Image 1 (cartoon, rainbow, N blue to C red):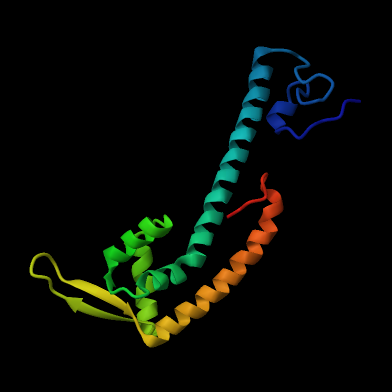
Image 2: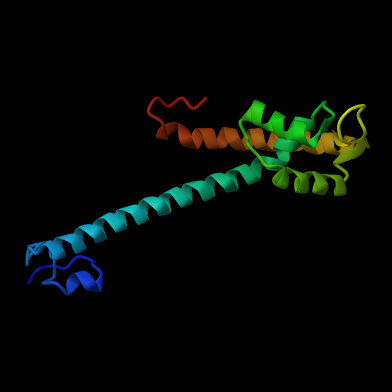
Amino acid sequence: MAETLSCPRVVQKFSNPCSREAPFANNTPFTRYIVLHYIVHTMNRAQADLTQLDENWQAQLRKGWLELSVLATLWGNRLYGLEILRELEQVSGLIVTDGTVYPVLARLRKEALVTAEWEEPETGHPRRYYQLTAKGSERTLTMAHHASDFTKKIHRLLAPLLTDGDIS
């Protein structure tokens, strides 16, 4: 008896076209179409699942680094929101929307890690400028040291995975 692969019922209904012995046992165009459609559909779904997994993983990774990135951007700087977004993109390649960064800034303000002051320029609209507090500077340094130690450990783990072993 032929071993059966995992096939949808509609495919198995046609002389079991998914058997290992004779995948196109009744060799009709419709059977070939069903089997090939199933294979292509399964491959596309698997690729979509991998793409989604990759996108979700990358999004979670960015979220994990966002607070430290915003604090580091403010290190020694007094910036308004759009400048923070631009700095994040230019320095780190981290592309963040204002809908992502403003809630972080609001939370940092609430935790007294940053101050925020409205200023009205001579031309244009008012802007809220953010700056680290002493507590924010201390937290940024602590987080930076922990992040640096953590990334060094991760680099050691990843080194064998790379072909040349250099991940710098």
